[in-house]
Amino acid sequence: MKAITVEPKTPGSARLENIAEPDARDGSVLVEAIAVGVCGTDVEIVEGKYGWAPPGQSRLVLGHESLGRVIDPGASRSLKKGDLVVGIVRRPDPVPCPNCAVGEWDMCRNGQYTERGIKEIHGFMSERWRTEPEYAVKVDSSLGILGVLLEPMTVIAKALEQVVAVGQRSYWEANKVLVTGAGPIGLLAACAVSMRAKDVHVLDRVETGVKPELVRALGATYHSGRVMDLGFEPDVIVECTGVGSVLEDALHKIGAGGVICLTGVGGGGAAPGHAVADIAAKLVLNNNVLVGSVNANKRHWYKAAQALVQADRKWLSRLITRREAPENFPQALERRPDDIKVIIQFSEI
Ligand code: BGC
Image 1: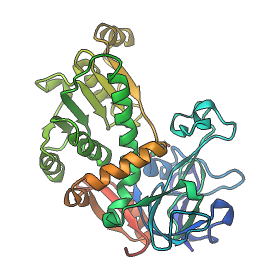
Image 2: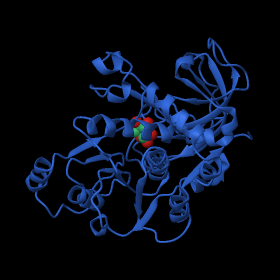
Image 3: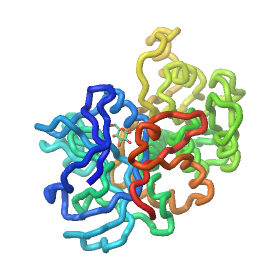
């Protein structure tokens, strides 16, 4: 079968190749791939900056934002042939650490977790894949291709849960929420936040195009330019860019008692213009919390599936801006100006 594979830490090693059918040891549920979303993490893996092949192997099947159709439900008691499913990305560490032991693998404490398509387990960019029944999430069939947005939505479901957990340490009214970055994660965050909060703002670099339109369609306010120039102090900032200067501005702009949740992974950039101790003093004097959030556990997958079903379908479908065939995977990995979510489509839905 066809699969998109990469030799992690080796830039330019990605290729479409024929590999063996999925191993029965990967799980009893056999799935036909429909589509796989491409995200910044995939680009980083292909650029040789991130990613680990399974032990004893040199190549990794890429892809962690899956959508497929059940060919054989195997040992699953709830799935049947033809159901739409998405595969959970992370597996608990084998020790296990206390968090993995209670099913919070997203909070793994020893770093020995594995992740499909990212860390030591093959991903979903192959014509067929297998999963253990407990790691297959059934998607409402009416969502169709939009089910491919479930994995990025789980990242948001967890991040928002973190924000609420921190906010509720004291009396808390979160009126103004700012999302920085209008990529897929930022827009899905804006969509999920708009379901709960009235005054939602999204900031991105672009001034025109589909991103501002999508933000306004949610009833939220779009801003381009710098966080520092906003005329208000947000109660919550969901940071989805990973850009150092945006974070620096966010640290200064967050309101008293406010929470900044980091979801974007960046690196490098200019050294901050402010000493860490000065930033710490601001956080102390204003009771601010800076919280990082990665991945998602089953509770977040459940919440994200609910959020997707409640969201406006037409709005969600505008997030998928390009569909590429597996043969065109190099183009799928390119970032074009109007791209939001690019997917690689393996079969028709
Ligand atoms: C994925 C997460 C994963 C993280 C770190 C993200 O792109 O969506 O599931 O935990 O990368 O590897």
